[in-house]
Structure formats: structure tokens, C-alpha cells
Image: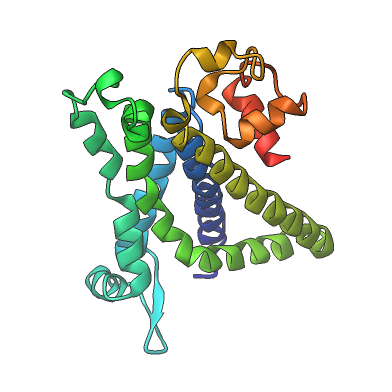
Length: 239
């Protein structure tokens, strides 16, 4: 458990968990490039390997004794809450979204369905939420990062400052994603007709965002008349 190889591996897993904490809420709110799925797949493989390593390879203390017998490790690992959550996190639920070849189209008959408008990417994003189960064991890996800082004799004070700043930014990111998604969910219910776009009170702004915070930002000249790109709206939500 105290080997350098184990230390490096746990830091790698820690980075994948941070990626999940950033990417999963972001995908729920914004459309992301298809290339991001490659990163998702790589992180999923790392966590799958981590489950195998804990169940069959990594020696651990059981009843005060260091054990490296694969059969004993497997029974012990899957009897713990961490093992169950780790296993749930690596199950490829999001692959199920690819089976929806006859996915309902978004048209005038279901225009009040925000879920159908957001479509298959939203379904895949929702099915990746179980990946966050492993975040419950984040403290196990953050302790290894602390060891890593001490091992390489880095400044612990600087590390704490970076960690605190990153935590604040991460919470802000979650809030921004929720705030952004709120406008997207209200998208269809707020659009009455094209006449809204042409009205004197709202001469240009996309009528779909009338009544949401996007319209408020537009009236304060913080967003362009059409609501701006998704990333512009995200930055305004973050700000």
C-alpha cells in the first residue's frame, strides 16, 4: 500500500475523478465536442483497471494483517461500500444511449419537451451520472495526493492554496452549469411565437430565452441579441 507505484496510480485515478466532477455537470448543461468522448473512454478504462487492481492485485490490510491473496482480496473488496460504489461507477450505462436508434424526433408535436429537444447527448450525460458514485471514495485518493506532495518535497502551503482555489472554482462551475441548464429547461415553455422576436420591447433576442436569466443578461448588454453561443452563456452563468 505504501509503494511508489501505488502512489502514482492513485494520483492518476484522482485526476480522473476530478475530470468526472468537471465534465459530467458540464455535459448536462452544454453541448460538448464529440472528441471529449475519447477522454471519457480513457478515464473509464483507468477506473475499470482500478477496480480490478483493488480486487486482485493491491495488497491491503485485513484484520490487521497485510494480505495479497487474490481470492481474499476479491471477497473483501466487494464486501465494502467502496467496492460496491466503484463497481457501480464503472458500469457503462451511457452506452445504453447508443441503442436508441429510434429516438423520438423533436418537432412541433412535442416542442414543450425540453428533454427531447436536448436529445441523445442529454441522455448520455444523464446516464454518466453514476460515475460520480466513486467520488464518495475521493478522500482515499486525496490522502495519496498529500503523500505525493510530501514524497516530492513540494510546498504543502502552496498545495493547500491551489486546492482551496480549485475547490471554489469547482463549486462555481457546478452552480454555473445548473444556472445554464435552468435556462435550457425553460427554453420551450417561454417561446410563444416569432412575434416575440419582432416586438418593440424585444427587437432581436431569441424568443426562446424570454423570461430567463439570458434575457436579463441581454437587457444589461452582457450578452449579444441572439443570446450568444453556449460557451458565452456559460461564462455569464459562471460570472
